[in-house]
Length: 219
Image (cartoon, rainbow, N blue to C red; front, side, top):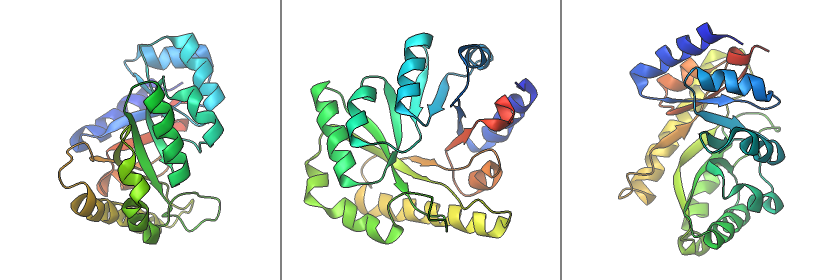
């Protein structure tokens, strides 16, 4: 646990007005409680089962984000408790989120995950397919979801210029999509980008939400 790193991260985020999501996957109750007592209330989980279990342990005082891949059959487990889903990568998944949100009479906040990395292991909507995605008539019919912005992960590389180029691509795409599809929606305002190794670059390229775990909990 490293409170100095935590404070330094917050100091770096402050000039940008960005928010910190502490990635708490595989972390214990006591570890999360410690970071919570530092003043942190936004946590991100990769696995649905773990998110649900930790929500039951820690009560309603925390804001949970689902940052990992999401299967359709797991959507119903998280809709009542998750504030923001970062990893929407298909219309079918978005339809299921809308369906479950309608059952709970809520509007679920979501981000569209974009594949900006040059790695096959990274998931997301291809930038070239995003406009087709948003123009689909089924997208316009979903009333219980709110698209808040885009999410992306850069390639795992030491090439800083490549990382910067990928985050810049995400920001440019965000601006294009906002202008074309969400020009009248102030809620379309988030870019989720940047993790422990690359978040300063992501901030420079417009990130509003950074997802950091290892710098805080230590590897």
